[in-house]
Image (cartoon, rainbow, N blue to C red; front, side, top):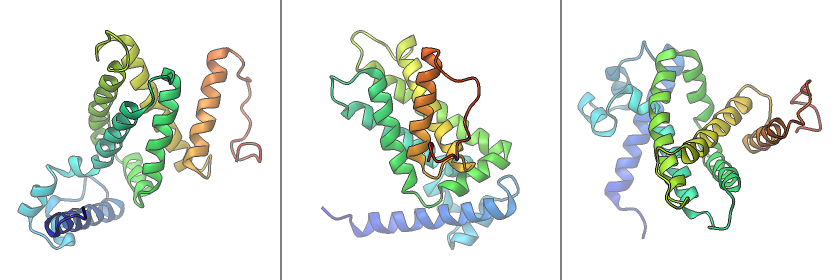
Length: 209
């Protein structure tokens, strides 16, 4: 069923506010930008802003929530015969595909890299997302609880690989998020097996891209 007129209008206003905020955060800085300025730039009232977002922090961290929910869905949809590390691999790959389709990903990372407050907004929601991911892994392990070591380890590994891959792509080590993730998985496997070389080859060498 196609989205209703109301839902299309909701998304249009939501996206207008989000884009206006990212533009202002990029130009002025996260801390220096006010909610009033975002609302004015988006052509809505301050009251309308708070219908869509609880705060500037909430707005900036929307991607963390969205991609966290996508990872939970991916874990839940993985075939039962996959090993835990295969589930992590598939989940990261699918989440990065979703991230790569978002046009403001680089801008959002840049804002977070420049601002401790913006990074804090991301980290607060990342912990929330990781809890949900741990619960999804626990559901795949007989008798496991969300707070148990194995689900927490798998959730932490998922978010860690996701984050490292995104930063490697952002800083230009790889020209593609999926390539970055495959390299991170490869390095992790070598480190855990004790076969990692002491010197790391240049990430931009032909063998890595």
